[in-house]
Length: 344
Ligand code: ADP
Image (cartoon, rainbow, N blue to C red):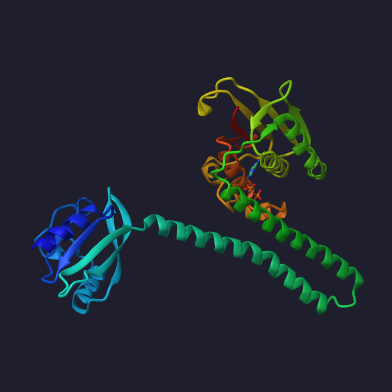
């Protein structure tokens, strides 16, 4: 009897839901967390009052009979939401063993993360396989039907260069994304002057503007604009948004920076960077998903333009590292505005 009181004290102190089921298959101890999780106090009752899923009862029966530890996985509802749990079942070490300790762990978050990781790997593999398949095809053609044909060889080498460049861009964007993600919690400490950084970002897309015959207007506030930030990352934000406006727009891009003294989302003074294009616009149902990795409205069009589907995901991460916001608004047939809001 004393021993049960000791077990009660120990199990009661555990921060996780825990239960002891005795050799007689009755519940000997339940701590407060397990009573809350399982809905009632079943102390003294048969364990099936709290555990009914066959995967768990079978494991518990085996552990009670052979004394070997096991883990079962069950689904429970927590606050009306279905959640995945594991139950670690460990026989209590004493002779004879008074029973089995059951510790419940909510693993829904881990399973969700695992699924996200698997989806990401599947997406990356798919994105890399597309140019790889094309490259293998060109190599085969060069070895076979196009052998000795100088004009065809030149043409195929050109196409191979395009595919290799696509792979290079994808690897570059994947590395950028992973770097930005790893720094997500590091608040930038260096000072950056934004008008000069933005002018430089515009210079880096001049060649793309020329290719797409785009006219760009730049409306900057007078004087310098200093904030705490990571200059390279903020330039990447501007570059990615400018490249999109050039790629998906229709010849006109307006860039404007303004300095509102009170921006509700920042609860104080802010910098607003608007990048507006006159493209065909975006249907509202796409807007919330645009910053997901590899989400594209028109995959074919994005690929044709050399897109990786990662540009806006990178933008979102950088902006949130700077405690800012990305707003997207768009009117079909008129164009889109991507606004970066940063605290000042
Ligand atoms: P991508 O490399 O495909 O351009 P992004 O992450 O930069 O990847 O953008 C994701 C998708 O959002 C694009 O494929 C495109 O469908 C859409 N998009 C981005 N910017 C614009 C824009 N200015 N106008 C219309 N659609 C856009």
